[in-house]
Image 1: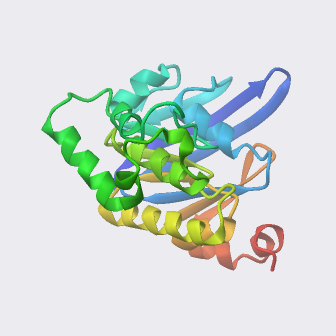
Image 2: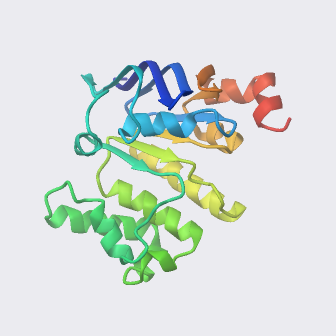
Length: 237
């Protein structure tokens, strides 16, 4: 299995505050890798460093063998890194369909975009039903579906999911995780940041546990679920 993402010695600061400290992480093609930990552990910061919206202060990020540590975010998108940001961040005044088409802005606008649009509507029928409505009128769960679909319209080689279950009712959480599983089965490579550690590790090939800006543990999803310290700290067991 080829390595698509390799993070080495990564450091990141917000002013004088160190958010990431010598982080080491890798993701292989076709894997679903979960990144779990408490609030403020640095999970979302790490994702933002990979997508390029947060500058790093040390270390290297290699994607598909290329050093992208200093590459601009738009360059990373063109190479196939697409992020679903925390809090969804859909473009509220724009229609659902225009939000989706915006996800394909770096692609040639041909019949393949229409085919992918149909695929998104098949995956999330409610988006088809509401395709002409302003995205801001959707419920939180529907906006999460839209944010995920918008990222998928970019045909990502690496999909970054930042807290997809945040603020959603349990029924919607299950629906979102069912979609993540379907994407994994399609072969989409996913790096998933999630506070719901049990849900994330249950579907992950591998996982990393972050504590105060560092990787504290890593292993298969099953191994981490079975670790007593992970159970006590993150699973309420």
